[in-house]
Image (tube, rainbow, N blue to C red; front, side, top):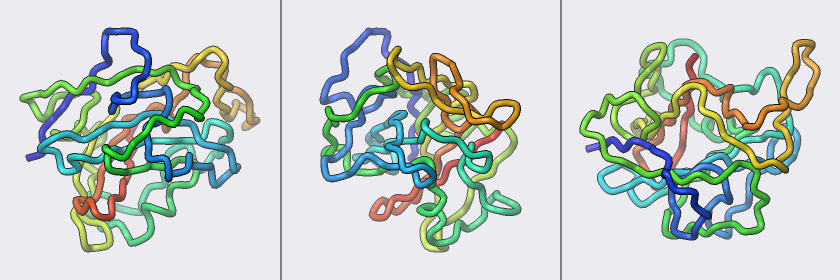
Length: 232
């Protein structure tokens, strides 16, 4: 059973610890042998946005998903992850697509026990710890792991990847989710009204235009892949 855990920020002002497993900002907790991703569009190191550790009775129990995205460049064709063409509901995602579409963002999936806080990473987003609170209602509308997705524009979940493994719902972030940044963090760049690249001049970063964001993954954890859907 895919249990539902609401993602709620801790009320405490905390310093990041080695045993924090689900959080936004701060320093990523990923295995030492995994390099911090770089942007395929501009070559810059990507910014760490958040990570979540999947818990008991969830399909990816024992694994963590970490999300990175570039805040140093912008392109009109890559504000959100590339979508498949045509009808999306129950579609089969072709082999290789879930690797190729990660151009200015990157999803890392690894065994939670192998993660280590990367102290050499320069923090940009303010660290906030997520507490996972079990919900009896799988349809609860909130930032959550598991349960049932709250589709904003209708169900667009694919059926399979490479016709070999089922795609399952992992988590969602609701619309207008801000990632507050530290005072010294460089501004995220944006396209102005004249399509000129310029600093966004906001005290936060946005991920995929702050749209409703849904993360779906392969049931086969031996080769974990993530498909991201945004809706507005």
